Image 1 (tube, helix red, strand yellow):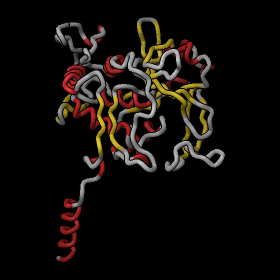
Image 2 (spheres, one colour; image 1 turned 60 degrees about the vertical axis):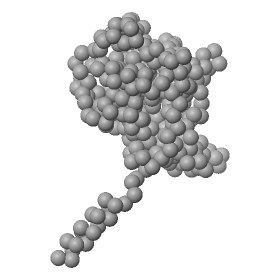
Image 3 (spheres, helix red, strand yellow; image 1 turned 90 degrees about the horizontal axis):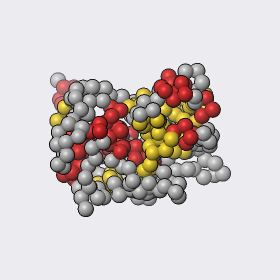
Image 4 (cartoon, helix red, strand yellow; image 1 turned 180 degrees about the vertical axis):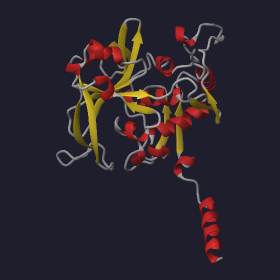
Length: 308
C-alpha cells in the first residue's frame, strides 16, 4: 500500500511544482512599431482563412516590405536574462523568418506570441541557451512544421558536409556560452542550380545561404517568392543600398553565393492553428471580405493599414 501512497505523493508534488519557463515565467518586450495590437489581431484572424501555406507566407512576409533592417533586437546573452522579444520596428534576416513562421501558424496576436516562443526556442523554453541560434536548428527543433527538402529539390546535385557549429576558432566561439554542436549539413551548390531546379522551388520556401565557414551553417536567410514568371528572394537586407526588407531576383542573387539549404513549411488545407487559444482549421477558400474599407482578396495584395 505504501508504494501507492508514494506514487500519489509524487504526483501531487509534480502538480504543485512551479511552472516551467515555457509556461510564462519570462519577460516579454513588445514593440509593434507603426501597427497596433488590435490591427495585428484582426490581420491574423482574417489571414488565417487563406487556404494554402505558400499564399499565407507570401501575404505575411509582404507586410514587412519596406520595414528597416535592424540587427541585435533580441535580448539575452551569457550575462543578460533572455526575454521574448517582438520588435516590428525593424528586423534582421532571422527575426524576419521567426515572425513570418509564427504568424503563418496563428489566428490571433495571443497565438502569435505563443507560436513565436515555439519557433524561436527549443521546446519553447525562453532561455538564451535554448534559442535556435542556427538555421539548421529549425530542422531539429521545428521538425513538426518544417521539412528539409534540399535533397529532394537538388535531386543528386547536393553536397553533404559535417560541421561543428559554434566551435572555437582562434580560441573564440561565435556565440559565447552556447555549446558547440555537430551537424550534418546538406546543401545545394549554386553552380548546380539551373532552371529545372528553380522550377521546383515554391513560394514560401525558406532559403539559407550556405557558408563554407567551418563553424557556421548559413550566412543569411530569406524566403522564395514567385510573381508571375519571376522568382525572387524576399529578405531583410543589410546591404547599404537597401537596409530594408526587399525582393531581389533569386537567380541573380545566388550567382555569387556558395549554395543554399532549402526548408519547406509543412501545412496544407485544414492545417491546425489556434485562434485566441482555441484550435481551429484553415478554411478551404481565400478571404475576400471587406478590410479597412476595401474588398479585394488577400491573394490580390491586401495590405494591413498601419496606424499613424
